[in-house]
Amino acid sequence: MNFINKLSAAWTANDSLLCVGLDPDMDKLPAQFQHDADGIFKFCTGIIDATADLACSFKPQIAYFAALGAERQLENICAYVRANYPQIPLILDAKRGDIGATARQYAREAYDRYGADAVTVNPYMGSDSVEPYMEWSDRGVIILCRTSNAGGSDLQFLKVDGEPLYQRVAHLVAEKWNTNGQCALVVGATFPEELAQVRAIVGDMPLLVPGIGAQGGDIAATVSSGKTANGMGMMINSSRAIIYAAQQPGEDYAAAARRVALETRDAINVHRA
Image (cartoon, rainbow, N blue to C red):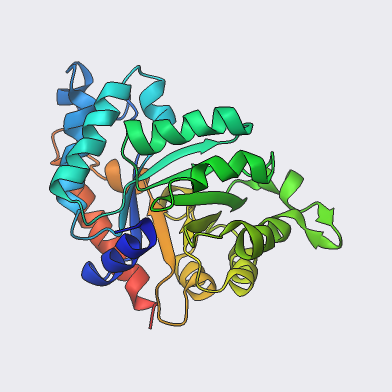
């Protein structure tokens, strides 16, 4: 089963557009994990177990693991998802972007080393920097388009032949790059008007939508702007608001994460009809 089919099945099976992000920060982990050599693995798999029936995808952010020298734990977390929840797409949030030969090595890292179903990539260097990821035709290539950070406007609003650069990226991906039907775009929840414009350009292409939860994106506006005609089409990511939901020392972090994930999924679903 390829990435797009697996994602579509997860949307339906879990009645969910929620993507749970895994961003382990040692300073925020519960005390029992902070001095444990396998603490990151135990923390993340606890989150995964608590939310797997509520999520359409999991998205580990590689920087949080690499900064701690925890790539082996990330490998083990990815293997855990594949073994225990093979029906849930695994997205490696890496935002890679380099020339073709180097991009091919980044693709091997994402798809072979970590076994990810999809990876986020940066299109700034053009088509030949993205093509190596397409060689894995069963995997997803999720391309940055309109990012959720305020500084994204510095470049993404520059005009190219009369249209903003982010719209040019959307057209390129939808009309030229998506030859295998494996592409998706990153469009932030913090800009619902631009989200709607991208949806109009790309049709039913999946969108990875960061920016709700800790970044403050509005769920109602996000769903209204980004959903497809059948109420699907999005992976709406929440990371910190879910994984660090426990507010008191000693509070069950996994139960707290499940509570917020359930609330978030249900809040999204209210606006899908």
